[in-house]
Image 1: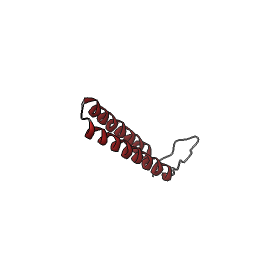
Image 2: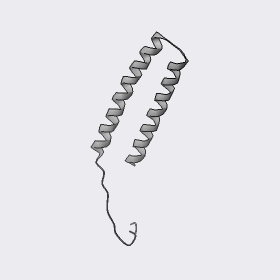
Image 3: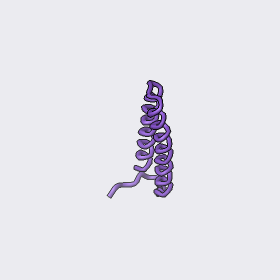
Image 4: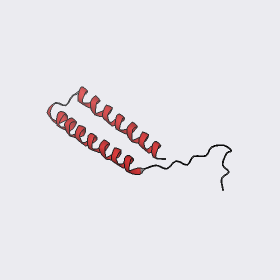
Length: 72
């Protein structure tokens, strides 16, 4: 059994429903942006559209990693 440090001890419990709601919202936003970008790439394939896709993917990866780190 782990030894508790002396002093004030406060157990913290998390509500995973808020995390699930946030992940669901992020997924919806990602799907909307992916659809817009896919339509944009079909109409006008160019460097600017590709950079936008890469930027969105990076933002989503950072967001998901941040939420995973908070859940642990």
